[in-house]
Image 1 (cartoon, rainbow, N blue to C red):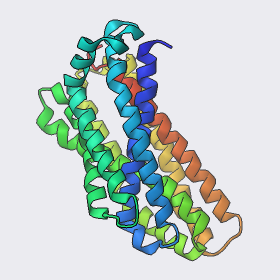
Image 2: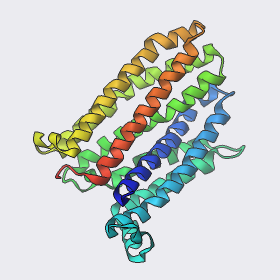
Image 3: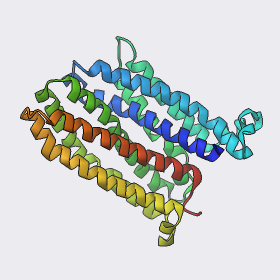
Image 4: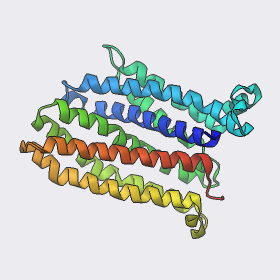
Length: 285
């Protein structure tokens, strides 16, 4: 595999693990007290995702060195490795590692610190503000807060899906439906911020509409289409299957879990598109 595409694959997996860990920490902080039966499972999920994310992030600098070299000889080139770690994405990686380590330590074992885990989640989720196209744009003062909102809400949404699946699987239907309703009430206000912040950033980053016909713009449009599909699935969950679960309609549990899995896979696809967009392309290409 070409080093470029290896870097995209590893970045996509790292983003998946990072936002799973961060979102699970947010979920525990928001809903953990209502879910004594499943809270420990969600904490273990967060720790596993955080440890996997750390391993994948540590691979990113060697792959960046391989990309600089044009082949995998860069993996053992000390000068290129040093350059990769001192680049802007090296600082972002370091903050991500610190945040994920804090999540793993805070949620491991009997004495858990949810507040520390939430701090680690915020650090890990927002670390990308330090690198990429927004960090070098003249309008960074506007782009940085927009990107922070975008990333935090992505973590909240994506990272809650697996905990919600576990909640539906292991908690009583009435308790699961109550948490789903609370999550949906929050998501109704927060999730549209993903699109609003994304469109605002695109407006600031893209100088002309012709960019939308290039790979960077096409990936942005693909992400927007996937987001629209995700909103449809979320609406079906909220208005149809959650009330059915609350009413103890037998097929509702499995139907909800299937839709949550579909949402999960679609967001992973969005993260993969993001990895390709931020690794291989720029608005100026």
